[in-house]
Picture 1 (tube, helix red, strand yellow):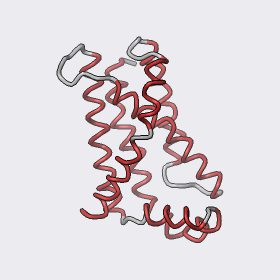
Picture 2 (tube, rainbow, N blue to C red; picture 1 turned 120 degrees about the vertical axis):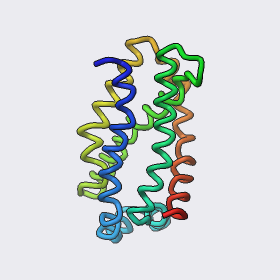
Picture 3 (cartoon, rainbow, N blue to C red; picture 1 turned 180 degrees about the vertical axis):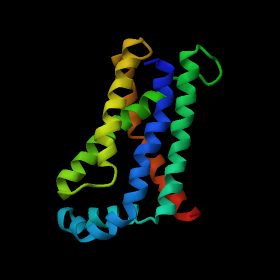
Picture 4 (tube, rainbow, N blue to C red; picture 1 turned 90 degrees about the vertical axis):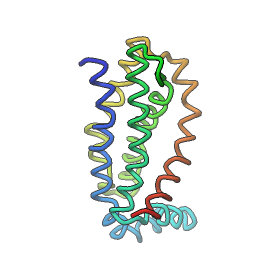
Length: 175
């Protein structure tokens, strides 16, 4: 597959995955509230419930905020591959690819912990894992990144958490 096509598939795979989360999240949280308190320490369970207690519309608004970052990073990666000086950068895209890859395992872990299909686990396993693994492999194979780049980008993966929290905050206030 052409590298540009693979890069531009990122927003498509992201939206496909997040549609599953958007569709399932609100009802799953209502149905599994007691299980969350049963499986997690009370303080953590309360935080999880508060953080994800969004209506479907609110959660969709939060996803839109994150989608803007995904789209910007995709544009920047495309520019970088083209040798474009205008916003050409591979680092943000690499960080988000690493987040996407790691995110799969959070979904799988949640499903194992709660012994149920959790929002996002199906598309994580079927689409996100193969896509993100292939994307990282292709970036390495085409010398767009190195293992050193990945190591440099790993600490920045943690900086995505405040963006996600901000997206949820915006979602709660806009929808």
